[in-house]
Length: 348
Image 1 (cartoon, rainbow, N blue to C red):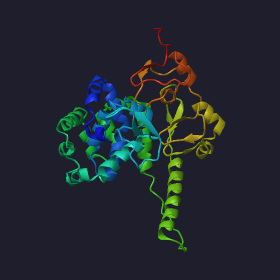
Image 2 (cartoon, rainbow, N blue to C red):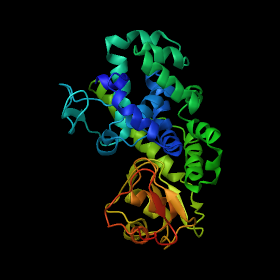
Image 3 (cartoon, rainbow, N blue to C red):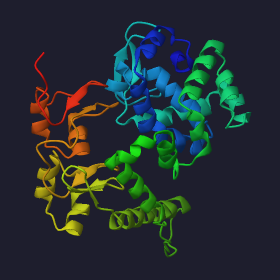
Image 4 (cartoon, rainbow, N blue to C red):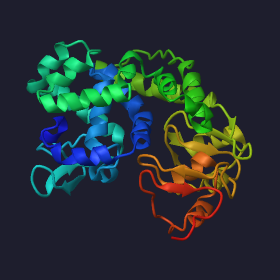
């Protein structure tokens, strides 16, 4: 995993420079919440984590990030039992970890730093001193590249926020997101979630280990918190025809929400073109059928976005979106690809 801190990064630097400014902005907007959450858990500056993610993935476009959701070049090692992929880095066809979600990659990055003796002294540094942290990674050239990335995108702003305030920090850096209905709905839902206090649970004493009783308490608290979050879902009107939609506040299932809105599961699956009833936090869910066109002419695909993600973001039917862009069903866009939402893509 030498390339995590730049030793194997030289070959990728030209690729990073070739990326557009907008692409890297999209990366920051998408992954800043993960970096801030890791900062709160492990005391690693969010600016350092984000800057490394930007560099290691080429703004989210690297093969490891796209196929393996691996944002920090983390290799398999002996203790890895999950999925793997081959990738040429320091040597041909090395073994790299494959994650179900980029968030797992971010946590693995934190664990790697926190558990390696080589990086012990980093944690004696001020967690807001990104320059000291960058130089503490031992590779002078990499440190300056990292600092340049942090200062260019003002990533140090995320060192001064919390996971409850991170969306406001993103909005401060990118005020144009005020016009993004989905982002603002997500911001509103996160604000609403903050008001939902974890319920107090009283569990009668019973025989058994303390750890087992604590696990039972945690399970009850999680279930009650989930119920409270679902109860406080905010329904918004989408700018594409005032379609009613909401942002899923927690991982769940269609069975958790259909009674609340009086729309049965089959209709919700049809409206949202879902393959199954499983829902994830921050999923966009429509309560009525989507439209055949978007409310804006075009859109550039962001990091990790699928055609379904874009269809949900703009309230447009997935098959219509594929048709407008002359793409086969199941084909996914490349990062930065121009997606047509109203008229049909011109023939090449």
